[in-house]
Length: 208
Image 1: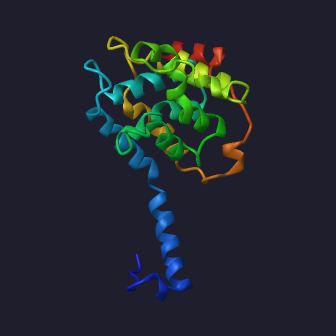
Image 2 (image 1 turned 180 degrees about the horizontal axis):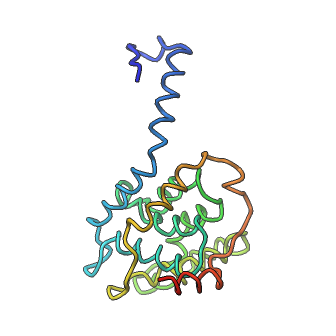
């Protein structure tokens, strides 16, 4: 990579920004690899005394896989807790920002709001509002938020569940994060795809 010798950006010109742009795209092309590394770091972040957040993420993605979910849903399920590595107090928003350029709007929105939806199941026990998700009722992806939590997320704290290994999901992660960012044919605003497909689910279970 060509090194530009500057003391301030005021000294920069087109040549400098051409070099920066090329370097930025080269670095961005390896985002899938860094996502895998960050997911591995979740093994040090405990969800409870029974399992790490990596295991929770693997369980969530495995349930999505066996439910017949498509690529966007599977990777979103896997990555939904990745914010705990660097943004533990804004985990859901961080994970959504990571996903947003590369998956359907439906999926990144669901990840961004998943903590509000999951509170329906336990918030009352800790003195919080279990109906936080109601603020989204009537919006396009409200039902997706419920299904994401009810079918995959809240179930994935079972230490006896046999999840697929992280390496199983590597090709999916590499596929999704090698897409052109913010390609409208990928982000597909206001488009919905079902979380589960019974026929695909059956074929995956038979192949297991």
